Amino acid sequence: MIQSKLPHVGTTIFSVMSKLVAEHNAINLSQGFLNFLVDKRFPEISRNKLDKENKPFYDLMLYVANWPAKRSLNWKTLLAARALENQSYVIGVNRVGEDGKGLSYSGDSNLTDSLGIVSSLTPFSEQFNTFTLSFSYLQSIRENLPFLKDQ
Image 1 (cartoon, helix red, strand yellow):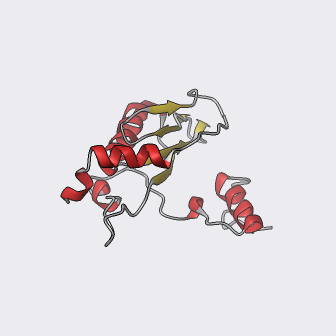
Image 2: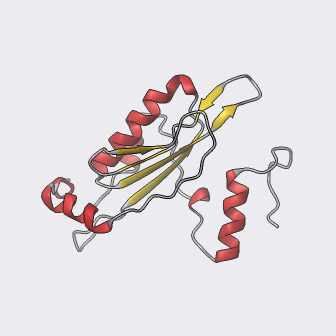
């Protein structure tokens, strides 16, 4: 069992993911490069660049956040922008429910593809869904719109 550094919080997505990672000897995305989309420097921090072989560094970006319901439109807009500008899939996982100060969180978790097409979960509900991602679809978009090479 992994000991939480926040013992009074209880079970969180981070503790669940950490346990699964340990069991399956996997990469822990829940503890890695988490982005919270809060400042104007953000787009540059996550900019997808090409390697020496002209291949993008990543194909999917994962964002885990606590965006309140009153900023739902901002959350969804910024996720779509990151997918479009980086020609990658973007998964945004956001909190659902109400915090101890009465702030409401709508979730609005979604998957956005590199053309900005969004597959959303139902707001204000805890859900689990499986999406199939296509690398060939992503490659086709990058070949037809090769703007990552313009950097």
